[in-house]
Image 1 (cartoon, rainbow, N blue to C red):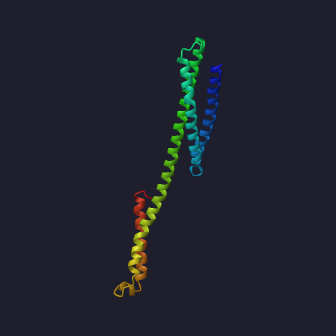
Image 2: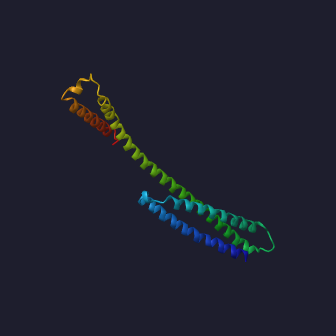
Image 3: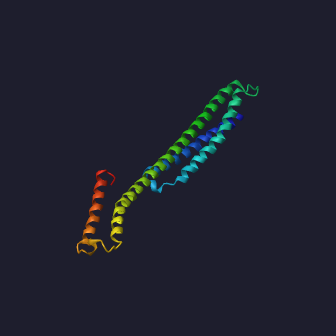
Length: 183
């Protein structure tokens, strides 16, 4: 009777694990399709549930192992064979739980790595833009001081020449970045 009860419990663990595996597969498909719409909370929830399931299966394995090794006169020799099979099933359930937990951890790492790569791309673009505009801001700042003794301030070609200088600086930096494959 005890064997039948514990066997049905372990069999139901397989059903639960199948549902978790299906959920994990759908989360993995979502991760591969569009990472921006991915919900990391679902993955953390699945990982926590796997941990909870592992904590509930572990004592069952211990109980079955103790029943198998007990040598009690209440357990027949024919039942010991079934208990060994049941022990193997509990070990298989625990292994499957560990596999699913490792997969969820791997998916979390993939998600975080992808988000980090996207953030790096954004930072690269912002850095390049800042690198282009810093020299231009410097040039505009120097000529915006309006000193009396700056000869180009009173020349008719002063303003257009500074604009051309700024354009040349910006274009040369863009070309440099393209040659370095930063753009």
